[in-house]
Length: 318
Image 1 (cartoon, rainbow, N blue to C red):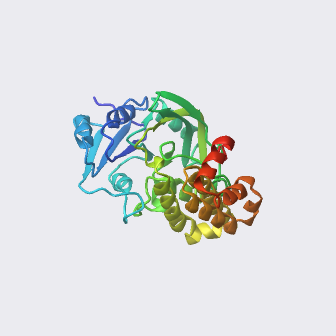
Image 2: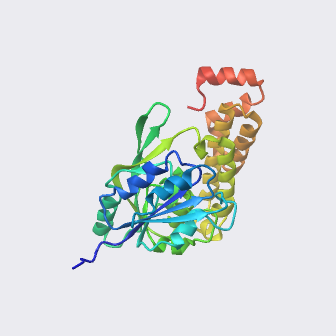
Image 3: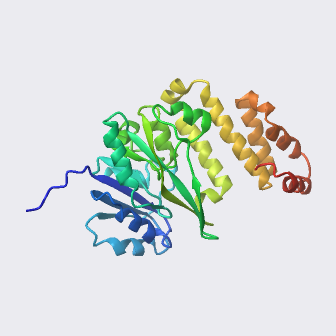
């Protein structure tokens, strides 16, 4: 007689776009979870490499469901997202997102479910710490996140992102609260918005691995900067967010702008860096007292060769 699984179902959502080189390890790490009652939904987001061929290697696995999108949906560009489409087709009580170039350690889901069981309903998002794996030299380092719990919205505004998207396990209704029909589902946007409505907790362990490689989206500073500005327009200008965040909204925007301004100057995109830093100070005038900000603005009026020399000897953005 078949014994019914009484564990709540967890849906692991894996969006993939042109990561055929990495997708097998990613999917296998989801299937290798010590927590047994999972479904793995892989959505191929219009890949043009061999990703879909690699994904189809798992088509006979009963835990795997495959969605093929014929056209790529880039984050923040259309009225939907690949992850949102997959979540809509999922059945789990809990949702976890895994990017196709990253992977989970085997006890990730099990340890988060155990903490959910101990919290007895008071918490809706549980995250963990992780490793960053460097493809170039095959090394890895630990990355410990903010380690905050409870109502963490102010932490998001004052300190930056609390979690990375592959870290949390989330109760399904959290996505019902913030909505799935938006172009940002599957990004940092999800957890920023959730932080306004539900409590967070964390497993104090390193359970995910983020792969650092030449094709990472985050390697393109300008692309990430433009994405950040769209995030500000959508998330930080949301009426509910502005009501809850008050004066801290400008602080968060200013912090992001300052960070990118320093980064632009470090890669010799001088004018864009200067403009971002000036905009940061306009948003949050206290940043006029940041030595790095003022030095960067002054430097930005010097010839590029002088800026490059100064950065080499002073490591301004470190």
